[in-house]
Image (cartoon, rainbow, N blue to C red; front, side):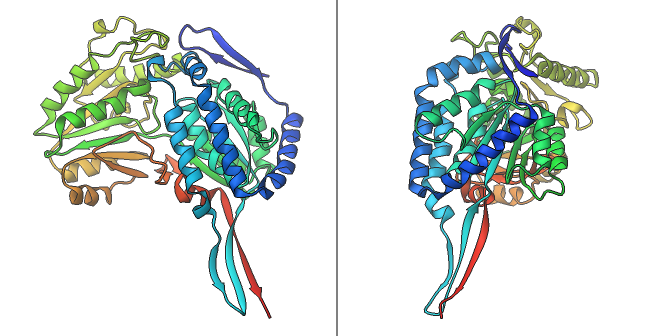
Length: 457
């Protein structure tokens, strides 16, 4: 069996890779399991330095990577790839490793030594998505390796070259090939390995249905799993907000990467006193976008990663308009709108009865509603099956914190959006999934506690 990457630029086959058979995959697990013991025995400083060197090696490949990403998933080359965030996240996790992985000393007296150590799970499977393929992968790969785990990376079929480049970079600096493996697996083999307890930890980023399949495969194995399964992230603009900053940030959060961001803004609630001005400014911003070939430097909005993704967003938008929503962006201004190339859209007169306000769109469309007060905004923000992030816009920190305490989500931003802070736990609730990555908590999830109770006499 083989996987294919169909380039959204022109629909051609950009890359094709054969998947491992069940026996080949099992052999890879065996090699990784053996190698992990030797890797974990290396000093922590050595593991940190090797991971940092691997990250730097990716940076040296950035020009090539930017072009590959444009071909694989359609991001315009003008944005320069992902190395800034990739490096920021890996560097932060390297910086906090000693503190995060340090033993907890309960007692060290003449009579007793009582400590809790952090022990690696063993072999970690990372199933990474295509939308930010380097940054999402490094969230787990870097701390997992630093903590002493071996890692198998299974990347999305839309971005098969990403895992290959990461493996080449990490191996080039001395990380053993069996400690970090890029693998091409079909769903059946992947789920079979999980159900056979091949891994100590599985990190999956993808669809809700994919997460359910991972959870079902792990059922009864007691395998540790972390799932990030999507979002319908809201923004709320209060009457005292900096309107220009709110519009600029929230619309960029909704449209950047053609709306294909895990924590992108998918619905916006604006206080009624600012609603009309917000819409006018938002429409002006979107009308300046240039939809087109991502290889061209003037392109600001590339195609969606696959034509089927664009089809889903078109259907959500059409359903909303048929139910009474108002479209503010004219199709005549975006003649390139066809196939995977999807024009941006701003919708008003939307309700939560519409799919575009309830289901994940993951495309360049956003619905905007007027609200009269905080209570209405909180009710609407919580009226969702997802809970990844929310963005609040106000000058009042206390007010923002009081609202944040009532929102069912993993992260709450004030006066910013669509950003992953590696110092904070990246987590979600409801259908967004469970677990937490990055920060000190990320290290705790990639290891298990082991207690030592030594009596000295």
